Image (cartoon, rainbow, N blue to C red; front, side, top):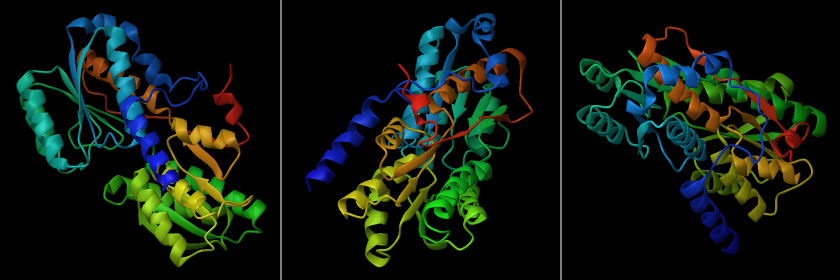
Length: 332
C-alpha cells in the first residue's frame, strides 16, 4: 500500500509540473527541419502577434506533458500567445477544442490527434476559417504539415534492444509481455514493430501477453494480472514509458526483479531515464526528445504561416538509451 501511495504521488507531480526529457540530455538537434524553422522564421512572421493553439491526446501521459511544456516554453520565448488543450483521451474534447480555437480566431492549430479520422471535419472547418493545421505524432487528412516518428521503426528500435538482451542474457529464450495501444490506429504499427524487433534477435522468445496500456495505472494493473497468470514473465516492452513505469511498479511490488529481468519503453521520459541510471530492471527507452518536439511543433506552425503548407513529412529522429549511453543524459 505504501508503494502504491508513493507511486500515485510521483505520478501527480509528473502531470502537474514536468520539464524537459532529461536532467541534462544531449544537445543534438532534432534535425534539419528544426534548423529551417528557427527563430529567424518567427521574427519574420511577427511572432508577438501570433496566436497558436495546441490540443494533445492526454496530459496524464508523461510524453505529452513534455511536448506541451516544449510548446509553451517556445511560445513564451518568442512572445507568442498559446492555448493548450488536454483532450483527456476523448475525441469529443478535441472536436470541441477545434470549435473554440476557430471562434477565438487563432492563427494556427497544432494537433496530436486522438482519432485521425474523427478530426478530419475539424481540420476542414479550420481551413474554412483560413486557419492552417499542423499535425504532430499522428496525421490528420488535410493537415498543412505533419511531424512524426516512423511508428513501426520506433517500436522496432526498442524491440530489437529487448531481443538482443534476451539473446545475450537469457540464451535466446524468454517469456515476454508487450503493452501496446491499438485504440490509436497508428500505434498498432508501433506495437507490431516491438514484437517483430524482439523476434528479429530472439526468435525463440515467447510472447505470452499483448495488452493495451498507455499510462501508469493501466500498466500497473495489467502487469499485476499478467504476473498472476504468467509468473515466469521476465521481459516487458511497452509502446511508451508511461505504461512501462506502471509495469515496473507491479514487478517491484511482486518481488520479481532480477539481474535478468528487462523492462523497456519509449519516449525517454525523465522517470525512465532515472530508472535506467539506477541500473535496475528498467533497461532501455528510445529518445524522441518530446520537449524539443514541442518546440519543433511551434517552429513548424510559424513556417507554415510564413510560406504555406509543407508536403514532406518531417521526421523526428530517435536514439536507443540504455546502460551504454545513459551517462550522456546526466552530464554536469
